Image (cartoon, rainbow, N blue to C red):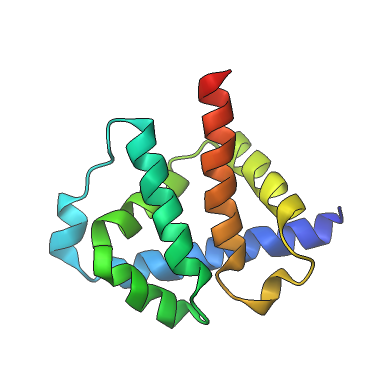
Length: 129
């Protein structure tokens, strides 16, 4: 596991997340009404749904269009990712990178997809331990 590759993966997650966040923030009314679900299973379902949408996107623009169908879900994913502690974010990035295909740059949203899925899996394990 090369440190350079992990950093590249991390930059990809952050850049796609930031681009999506900026595009979604243009929808002011939706942003103001988003509240995180109070229970983990609901949050996990939302994150997995967002990951599914991102998985089929060939570009960040396409991902943004797909995510605008459910702004609440997309913004929930952004908020959850942004609220992670630095330690949890680093751990999740490393685990997601370890499970990602070698050529993760083939699809621009794939690193974020892997991150969201790993976040669901890691936090689920933490909650059940």
